[in-house]
Length: 229
Image: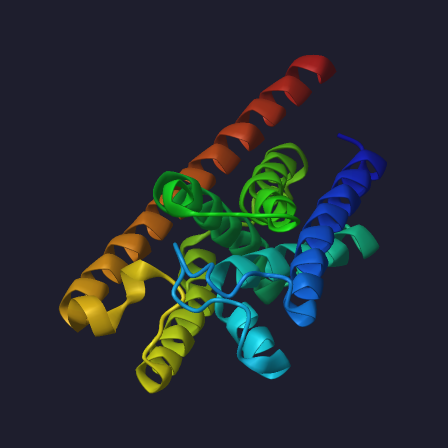
């Protein structure tokens, strides 16, 4: 794909991600989310004042992943040839975190979610559309050749920072953003087992992404060689 086409895809991806994030944030600030909507999460969004609602909003991994996508895709749209070690890390984070968000929500949490009003749309953007679009844009536009063992290792830092933040905050307020992190109910043993499983799953996903990236580059090289022959 030519640079103009890639830049357009990066821009579309950024717009979709920002729309979902900003709509969700707006509803949170306005207190539109129903306070009883604490399932499948354990915090809720209403009834504790503006600062409490915003702090709860920012505690969700879903929002972290969507914000990372929005920022990274905006940066790629503004400068498609941007490259550095840490930008490669955040590019992998943008794909990894949003794919984990989409898979875990739709496979585990969606069945018990009760979305009403505009929340139906924020849920669709945050958990369905942005994950799908982000993965497809990465497949089509890359950038390619950016994944390595060092990049994979560094890409786990941000999710671990979120995890520590969620667990430490939960220890103080006795509430956790997701049931599988609920230490108050299940204890640290079960929660750490859940976390370990998710970390392993994330590493496996990174390896799958790496394999896909290698295959795409290989096929592209073969096609280029065939055309130039």
